Length: 421
Image 1 (cartoon, rainbow, N blue to C red):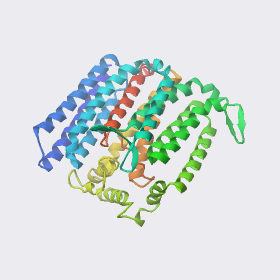
Image 2: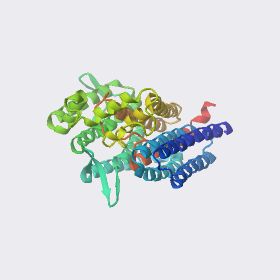
Image 3: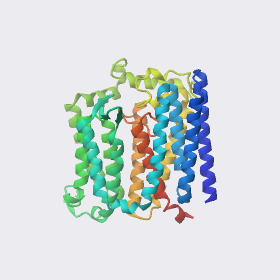
Image 4: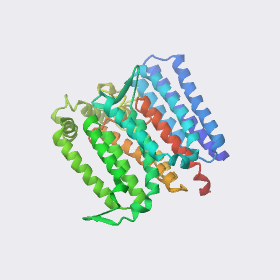
């Protein structure tokens, strides 16, 4: 236990040095240094240290790497946001504070994960309700109708809806694991259980298509779809579910492509951005130039031109990292995400119950898919999706929901680590 605390503390100190050095480098280069900003940095470092001490008192054997990885990525995000949009540095620091508080509360709540599984339908209804609120009352910002505005506050309900839906899926699939595995009905080449057992999965497919059509949110649609299908495969081990789901999604996506112009635009600029480099494809073209000019070590903080990319502090923040921190900085970010996903899958493989196994596995899939989709989009490996890079992109909803996700993983890992010793 002492070794765990020492390792975690050392990693938190390294994350603190990243944030402190990043703040000093950017603020001094731009002649924007202030003791107020330095105080914000010190308060954040103190806050995440206190958070680690509080949760470690009651969770002595939980994963010691998750929180340091989170604050390391958030520190890089804060540094880049200070570089790109200095006026957003303090709001993002406040959102990180809210995220750390949410992390602590989530760790406490999810110590009794099996109790939460009993409320699976309530979680599922809550998640779907949040998505319906977005579809009904959402406001179009940046091409996606996934924001809800309440007075001076705007947030993305879908960021929290995905967590509720994963809890529901983990509980539902763990209860019906045998029915999904030992299917008895044959539909052509596919062997599937009774329709009423896969009805929730079909409903999520329909909801995914609705999000793609109404919200023009290709990223969230892919995120929900991929997570649902992979979790169904984890629970059953049957590839027929994957092939059937891929077929349904391809059919739905093809129909959407021919019926809705905004879907065509996303695919067209992905296939050939050079056909309209100063118009519809301006963002992705500038992103490619940013990566190309970054080189191995980057141009250095404040010495690049990432602000030529519209909305660079949200959707394209990874392009800014690639330009000013180079391949080395981009690789460090990717490796941190890989470690986070690895620890989540490690927790899943050592879980004691089917619910916690599917829950942690689903959260790992969600994180991996989100990172893959956004990095694939800004590098033109995939069509642009418009989702945020967890813990790094500017946005309160994304920051808080990411810390809640890690809090769930941290709480679940408490019951698995002792069994490995």
